[in-house]
Length: 343
Image: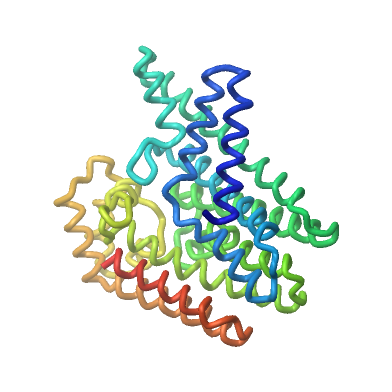
């Protein structure tokens, strides 16, 4: 078991044990939050560790604590994002909100009150994870100057991600012009900064890398993050549900403002595509028709090429920084996996 996994296991065991003294509902909150961390790839802690090793870091316990903190930050954002989107499942099973809503329904509450309890649980669980992430960085064991720098990076990631989440909802409601540039910026802010830029920079800072190099890692993280988010958006429409655990109907039913849709909006076929989007009753047959149109208008090819360009640029920065070949190969393997599951 990796150091960050062991730390997370201990964190949830201690939290669940303390919660028992408060009451069964609060214990259920911790149990659901623990479940929310299961099943992920843990690639954010892996990025922290990879950057740390690349710049000479040699304390696996220290980097494990920071990696665990980054994973808790991810958990907080995921749980809150599900509340914002009204989702009750994640990776094919009930999430925090869904678990509490189901229990409330089973206890006889009507749908509205059950949903309210679910949203409440999701907000509170996300809060617990967010505070724990900050605390874990603050107590990671690094010297005072390094810890302050790590907290600055964490704060920046939270600030930018909050702005990105707000922009995502604003775009989806049509309150801002939906353009490819606006959507790419939103995705950079919402996902790339905390999922890629923060882990890479945190690992480098923890290893004592020079500040100019840490700055270049911001560029690397941004490029990687956007590239992977583009591939993730493709999976959300064209992916294999069995491989990804993600519905290929949700984005279309919600009319989500993704780069794929933003590009399609600029094509002559948009008038054929638009009627299908944002329809909560969209079925598999009509979704297949949308996929055919998105491929025919060139949107799929354009986004695939754009993703390839971002990832290639990121690998170019990695080469410039003389990062280890195993890191570059690992990124390439991750990319190939994303492409395979979106095929």
